[in-house]
Image (tube, rainbow, N blue to C red; front, side, top):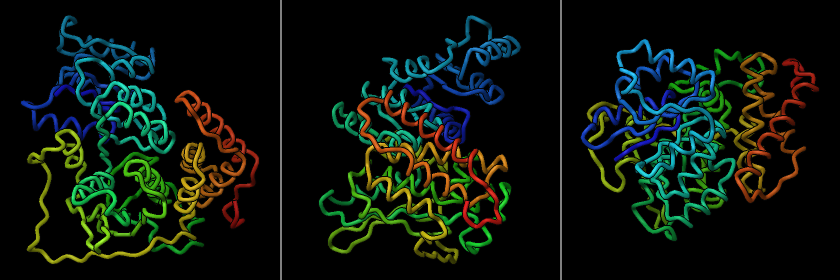
Length: 398
């Protein structure tokens, strides 16, 4: 199987390449698509010898050429080098590609993933924005072209496995688990004093900065609710979130006879990644096994939607439909950036998102270009809100 990895230097990309490393007789890297992290990318080029390498822009491409000259690969053995969105798209739809891992954070990976869907490539989906920003368009294309779109997020991957236990019409609800993040037990009033360092200290997962903050606000779980609605064709009312700090159960599906099927595994992303790559078959994965001889306690509770307003906003945006979820995602990214830079307090992330949703009129985009336009407009609105508001932690409001 020939693979293109969109976002090869990120955590999902690195884990994907480890799965390839463990299964060299089964998988071959066709293309590595990265941003600007050339230290990691160069080591990946040396080890996996891809046919194609794509980076963010021309200056990064020039730097990559200089770096390759210092490596032990003779120029005739270099991969084809390219930069920019068109090159990303080309690497995703190349005829020799069988599987595309979509792991670029943000809307940067949307066009390439959508093109891969239309090219009937099997896709491992780890990019939330693909469905949050344009779920209707993408899933319509999945149905039209008969594409295998396998979720890689642990919760959706777990749900995908649980759904195999019954028929779609037998499902009464899907339950997605959430760790609760670092502020699960923190009083709401104390969140005004939260620092970026505290918010980045996730109790279970090691992730990128934005997704870690989204986990702390539970926006990440809101995005997962939206994704689940599109992936499994469910209304928001049939997707519940339950706080499960141990993060051992990733998802549960309840059927109409009262049976609940749960997917349980160690917290290692290589398992769902390999599942997506080998589906419908299963192969031994290089992950730890749960030791059932050891005592363990699993706790479950409902999320506090008053303290974690972004989760509630996500449900509302999905109910509203159209471009609301695209705006939700765009505003959140801008607000998280502002929090990390110390320009707004932690609870105000939700305030920025809510105000942006109120100012942006929902539309029904019919093209990916229109989705990107809505995304850009929503980001600008969020920036204006941040610039004009008195963002003082002591205000208890914004």
